Structures are given as structure tokens and as C-alpha cells.
Length: 411
Image (cartoon, rainbow, N blue to C red; front, top):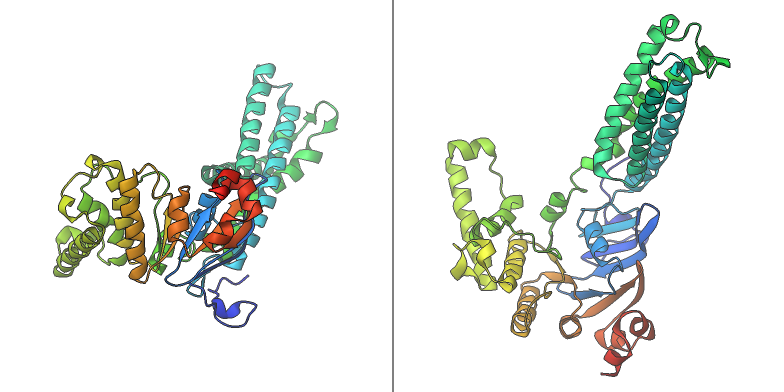
């Protein structure tokens, strides 16, 4: 399967998408649970779109899919005509699910075969059986982790696959010594089972590795799937929980946001080339401009953790703005703020839009959402249940039932 970048011209309409961001049929499944189910969302240039819904509705999961942190299980996402989810990726995920099932089956068969052949010869048969069952059980857990796309299980499963291949090859090269005159549970000659088993143990890891060399698999680490690459395209975000470098200064936190726009490498930084020094000065200047824009330039030298909670939230926005985005995603920016800070935040978001930056925000404060949003999208249990102007959303029966409540609608 090819992995060439698709653009908005490849859409069904046959023309480039007019939206800055366009997601169609976005779905995300975690261990059989659909966190997102066929969600359509779009953001136009210079637009503020609110995203609301009860806790667990899938709002942050959608943010993660839009920014490359999570890979959607289905659907397409385009930003400025660039496809953020190449089509082979969803096919690859299905392929990995099949491989995880094969890994689990291999683990169970391997455990039973080893116990059956060597049980009678083991010095401590009971302890040997417990040990083999434990190893087999851990392998099954690894396979289940692969199925749920748990990151750490991928490397460990590759390690086990390599060990399986080595063991299978050893069995084949030492067939007479390993299996001669042995039986499976005292019934079936072991070579009838263990030789085919050894062949499979050599072949399936080889298939696994060959799969990793495929172009669509390598695109897992390609530029248009990593969060930093999505940021370079022009999508910036903040998080629900504050994620500052608390021991760095306010200025340094913002300068880190500019990293995606710099070109200096490790060696140029060590030897302090002229180009690196100029770039460092430009980075400091741009970071100070971002702090001035949000009103924190007077605290540039403060340690980030020393700022009040509300200013830490604003600092996160400044760091996101330093990436020079076209679209800013804000995940509950007003959470924990007092009324004065919330009012200042609303003014800041308005000024961000005036700079030509579109905004997509998650927020539970309905005063904020209703006052500043041009359009509102409502999620419930991973599905989009409504979309429209604030006045329409306020009176939508489905939204009232799922989220707002009759008392808010009446007010």
C-alpha cells in the first residue's frame, strides 16, 4: 500500500476542502470500547468552535486524534489540505490486531507443547509447570496489550518473538537430541508436533519483522503522524492538566514552544556557531513577544511553578502561540480560574482570533462557551449529537437531556 500524502483534492468532492481543519467519520476504539464513533468536525479559518459534552464523552480523545497523539481507528482528518491520517494506517491497525491474536495463540500452544514434552523429565515437575504457565500467561498478556495498542508491549513482544525464532531454530538444528524418544503427554511422538511448531516459531517472527519493513508500517514514525510534525504544520494545543516545565523560567517555557521552528542541532549548540547564536536571539525575542501578547512579559524571569494557577494556564497558551499555529486547541482553559481570570481569558481568546488563528476549545463553563463560540459541537458517549449556533445548542432537547439540564435551558 502506498503512503503518499493525500491532500484535500483527493476528497469525494474533488476540490480542496474549504475548511482549515476537517475530520470525517473519526472513530477511536480502546480495547473494544468506542471512545469516538463516526464523529464529523470542522473548523474554518478565524473561527472559534466550542466542543462540549459530559465527562467521558470523548472530547479529549478527539483532541488527541486531531493532534497526532492518538491514531484514529477510522475516519480521515485533513488540515490545510494535508491528510493527518494516511489511509494505510487504519489498515495497519487491523493487521496488528490479527498479529496480536496470532501471538496469543502461539503463546498458548507453545506453553502446552513444552509442558507436554518435558513434564516427565523435569526435576521438579510441578514447579516446572507453574513456571511455564507463568511465562505463557505473561505472553498472553503481551498479546492482549498489542491488541489494545499499549506502547510498551510492542518492544517486549518483539523480544519474545526473537527468542521464539532462536528457540525454534535451535530445535530444528538439534532435532534428534531434543525430541528423539520423547512423547507429548506420553501419547503422541513429539516430532509430529514439535517440528511443525519449530517451523512456525521461526517463520512468524520473520513475518513480524518483514511487516515492520513495509512502507505503511514505517509510516507509524513518519512526519505526518507524530505530534511534533502536526505542530509544525500549524496545530497547537494545551492540555486539561497543566503541563509546564515547573522548574524552568516562564521565558524558557515559551522558548521550548519555538523548538519546532528552529534548525540548530546539538553540535551547533555545543560549539556556539554564529547561526546558532542568531537563532537563539531570535527565539528569545519571539518568546518575549508571545509573553507580551498574553500579558506575562513582566514575569519572564519567574520560575513557572511560582505563578498563580490562572497565570500558569495563560503561560501554556503563550507557549502554544509560540509555535506559530493556524489552529489552537484549548482543553478546558478556564478550569480552576476565578471570574476575573475567566473574563481575561475570554478577551485573550478574542484577541487570538483577531490574529487570524482559529480556536477549538473544550470548556465546561457554559458562560465562556456561549459567549465566545461562533459554533458549538456537542459529544455524548463518543458520538456527535448536535452542532450549531450557541442559541440553537441552548434549546436543543438532546443537548438539554444529555448535558445542559432543563434548569440551564430555562435560565
